[in-house]
Structure formats: structure tokens, C-alpha cells
Image (tube, rainbow over all chains, first blue to last red; front, side, top):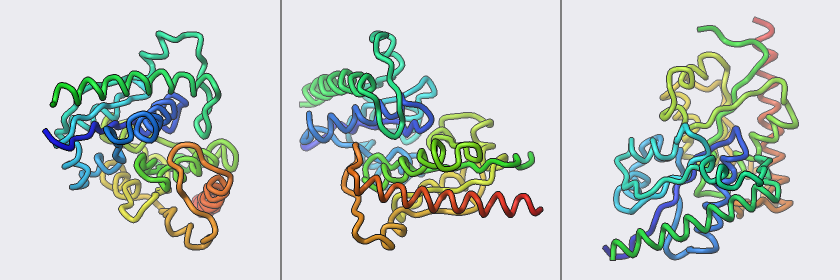
Length: 135
Length: 139
């Protein structure tokens, strides 16, 4: 496969800070850590069945980043028949880092940002693995 | 199912890929947290698809305002498709036309100028909330 990118799809999670943690982690990866190897797509576009969004997730490996066990991102990628390569659930990562207390939706507190950084590193590593397998 | 009194549902697109999506999200939270905390509720748009009947009943329980970042209007279309027609739609790109000096460039952390834009959008949402609640009270 050539010129493929890993599509990182965070949930829209607007009700809780963990949704923002997933969103911030995604931006850390696509804008700073792996800008050439990764990108994102609006989850709402997928939910609505936008043709370009569907093509993107069907032709590129996707990582779902879900803030809660409702797993909206994963379920919407699956419903779109996208290539779901990996799932990260923020609550699972939080369980392994119990000292962190993320707060804030408009803006994360420092602990939320630390959790996002941990998730971003995991995302970055996983993106490398996925792309390595494809080459 | 009847409309709940005194609450308006706000559904934003959250558009992860566009700065305007982040504006829609922050504006919605500003209304929920600061401008109209007792009169508004929200739901994640993708939960309409991932959730169950309770989530899909949202727009039948609450009069809703869709807040969309771009002209694709995912929040408006999604709410209509999965739950019920929104009473109103606020389009970030339209609000931006009124304030040409305010640009949206960041997807992650909003800069002061972008926060000002989000506040302008939030004020338009709050105004619409008041109109809806006023009409509901008169019925």
C-alpha cells in the first residue's frame, strides 16, 4: 500500500472531560508527533455517511479513540465499514494512571493534558506498528 | 413523548477535522457551563448512532438547537435523521461573516481571538435558547 495514512478518530465526547482528553491526544499526534503519517476526520461526517469520509476510513487503517465505554467512534467506524485497526478507550488508560484526575471540557487541566500525552504516545506507537505491517 | 419544560437541547457537530468544529464545541460548552447552565442540556452527536432509543428520543424530549461548524451541517442533519428536527441551527461559518476580524485557525487550544469568536457563537445560541423557552412558556 502506498501513501496511506492512519486515520485517528476521536469520539466527539462533549459531556465529559475524557472526551476532550481523547480529542487533545489526537491533535498531539496528527499535528506534532506524526503529521505525515496520520490525520483525522470529523466523526459527525462519518455518522452522516459523507462519501469522502467513508472513502477515507475504508481505504486507510483507523484508530478509534473513545472517551467512554459507549465507544461511539469504534461503532461509527464499524457502521461505515471502515478499516478499524485499533481501539483506545480513555477510561482504560485512566485506570492504569489512577493518580491523574482530568478535569475540564473547554480546556483540560494539567493532569488531563498529561493523560492526553500518555495516550498520544500510545497512538503514535500504534500508528508506526500499523504502517510497518502494511509496507 | 412530550417536550420537557424549561430545557433546550444543544447538539453541536464537534467537527474534529476543522477549527470551526472546535468553535462549535467550545461555544456549546460555554452555554452549558456559563451562559444558560440551568436551561440547556447536550448529547454527543455520534451517540445517536452508537446509542439506543433513549438517545434517539433526545429531540423528541427537548426542543433542540443544532450548532454546525460548516455548510455540511452534520449536527442539523444528524439530529433530524436520528432523533427529530431541530428548532434552530447556528452555523459558525455564518457567524464568522459578521466578525471578519475573528479567524478560526486552531483545532486544539483556542487562542484569545478564537475564544472571542466562540463567545460570539455562544451568545447567539443563548439568545436562541431564550426565544425557544419564551415561545414554549406562552403555549
